[in-house]
Image (cartoon, rainbow, N blue to C red):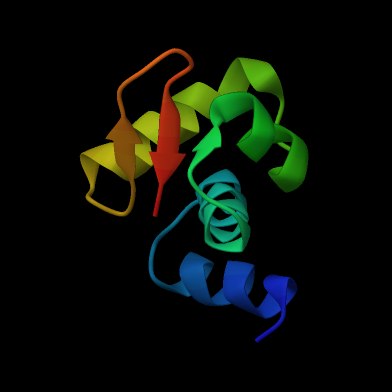
Length: 73
């Protein structure tokens, strides 16, 4: 499955475009920092942490405590 197909499929499941891109980025390489996810998913740094928090809240990702905080699908 290509990244574009994955983003589209996640959108059909109710994920926003940025949530879909962030989740696809986490599937490519994780754990990852918010900065790394933002760069890979082309999400502005000002928005990526909110997107990741929403993914954690719905159980699609998990937060790994530390400095820096990392995220995994």
